[in-house]
Image 1: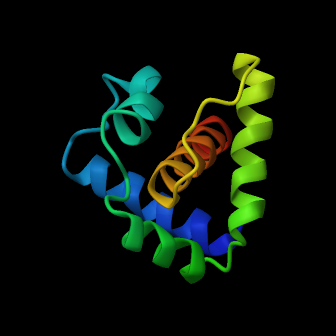
Image 2: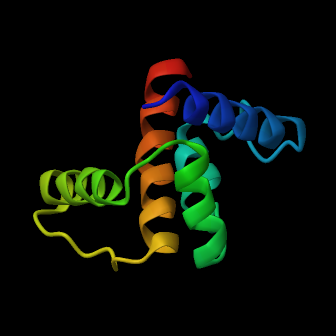
Length: 102
């Protein structure tokens, strides 16, 4: 995971903690609450810009999502568009962060 993404997602988690969305009573649900309840990025343009901002090649992003889904679910089901791929990337990276740092 790129440092810029880790920094952004750590700030997102900190913001959710300040808003009391994530707290000590629901630690086991942090990944679900932070990265699976709603879209992180809305809109194809915004998602494309997010990829550019973090210097992510589109095909690299698709490959990360594809490999994750094949490993975890046995099939690749995410639609190939910038919004779906970015939100799945954030889901994956969010899972890594929560498992490593919290």
